[in-house]
Structures are given as structure tokens and as C-alpha cells.
Amino acid sequence: MKEKIEKIVNALNKAKNAANEFADSEDGGSCNFDSCVIKLPRWTEDDIKEIEKQSGVSIGSQLSSRWYKGYRFINIGNGQANRKTRMAEAAKKSLKADGYDVSMYYAMD
Image (cartoon, rainbow, N blue to C red; front, side):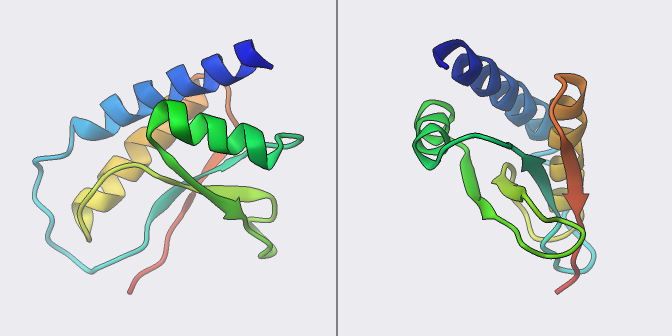
């Protein structure tokens, strides 16, 4: 399990770096809750807490909605509009390239 946690922590750190490329970009547009979501089947809550501790990335509880069932929000990035979207999409692209089951959750405020 230790190797599995190290692998995802490294992937999350890469995703943070990818997202941070947009940290100073403009943030106009509609406020939103656009976020990267990840599916982590068979991971325990203790595993999730350890991932959060090691990576500094907040991972939400499992979603139960129809299209996002089993996914969890990943809190990477800042901003409230266009920047938030770009950062979340960059994190998603990075995590997908590392082989994780990720998607985007788009919601306008």
C-alpha cells in the first residue's frame, strides 16, 4: 500500500505543478465550482487521509450523484472563475496522463 500511496502523492504533486502554471492568469468570467474529480475505488478513508497529509491536497468524500457516483472532489488551484477552471482542467489532464480515473465537474454559481 505504501507504494500505491507514494504513486498517487507524486501524481497529485505533478497535477499541482500543472495547475500552478495558470495561477497568475486572469480570473474574469462567471464564478464557478469547476473542479477535478477522481475515482479511488477500494481506498480506505485512512488511505485518503494519508494521501492528503503527504500531498497537501484536500480530497472530498465520495459523491453520490448519478453521473459522478464514486468520484471525489480534488481541491487544487485558486481563483473563482476562468482561472479556477483552467487550473482544474490542467490538474485533470495531468492525473489522467498518470493513469487515474478523473473527470471534470462543471457548475456555475
